[in-house]
Length: 336
Image 1 (cartoon, helix red, strand yellow):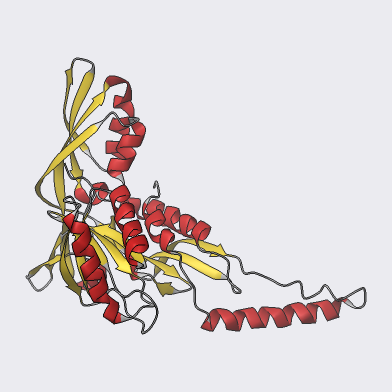
Image 2 (image 1 turned 90 degrees about the vertical axis):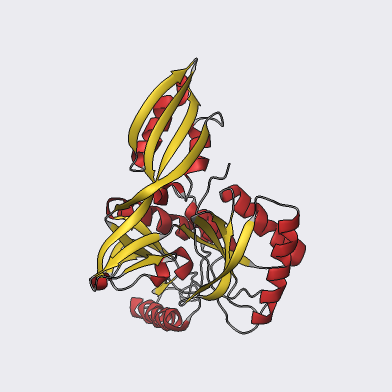
């Protein structure tokens, strides 16, 4: 049984150093896909190395699937399918250790249907390719019917988890000491970490199966994560408006922990369009420029601090932020 999710991947995968090129590797399960982006600071020729590495892994891992994909924003890449976050991490680690590749996981997504104001209808695999909101008349997201079997003592936690994910209960029956519950759930809420959370709240005893039912209209918004005022395409996602602030705040707090301090201050923001809904700041590394001042007029210390402040401001304008690989997967594990 395959659980985990959908995400589109984009970008030509590059590995070791060289021309800047966005790259990505994705995972796929039916309508669902996970994305793993290649480190953009790599040589585009290494895309073939990645293709060969994925083919070799596919030979001894039947649960891993992939296919070529392209995106207008990110370029060429692969759409892949994993069993979950753990499987994604294992594949990424094997590609890194066995083939010396640097990969970055992108946020998972599902296939959305959008009705535009001109009467046409399109399918969106990647939030990066979403058209301007003024052109969208309606967004529809896929829903599933989930069947969960769990020991009775964990039923309360399982029901709460499903309710938190915008679920609607359909049926609750008992088979001996085990409960079987059926829920209608939006696939968008399942693809991130639902299965991992389900195993956590049930201490591993719950089982989960689902099948797609239909598409329903939803109030979805595109949320972007900005690092030093630059959007990180790999972490763009469509979320329900009621959950956007909570997920955005959780993601920026997690990113703050994972991005190491630089010589300049780094703002991390979650934004919907031009509106910032959450912000955290990574403080800059600082040298004690007043250490050599012993006594004397306070204006001397102020002058040194102001000079340092101006230098930090200029550095932030032109500085580059390095985001660790582990930050991309860790950001997807937030509990919003």
